[in-house]
Length: 104
Image 1 (cartoon, rainbow, N blue to C red):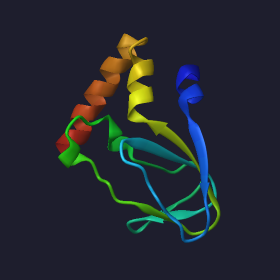
Image 2 (tube, one colour):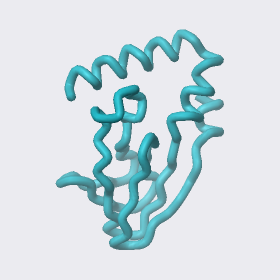
Image 3 (tube, rainbow, N blue to C red):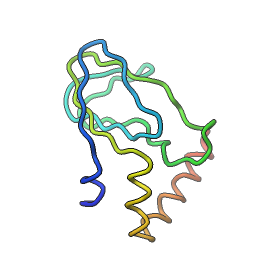
Image 4 (cartoon, one colour):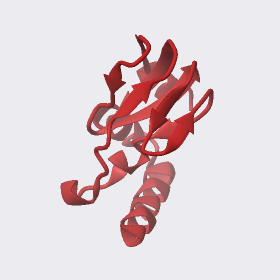
């Protein structure tokens, strides 16, 4: 877990700003946002499908900041590079990717 937290990047967006990066897990640290019809608040995540190998299964819907919002970002490359050092966790992520793909 410590290694992954060191890979997190923090960014912020002003009210009404559109955000959302491809192949990136987004974690709302502070503020409010909206994605599709769901309100994003502290602790909300989106982009968890960044673990999928198939690009056409990834939901690339952007979000909008409703207030000033701070977001932590974990990109796919950093996550998988870190997971190479932790084979059991890497297998769990691959199984999770199969479950996510099954729901798409």
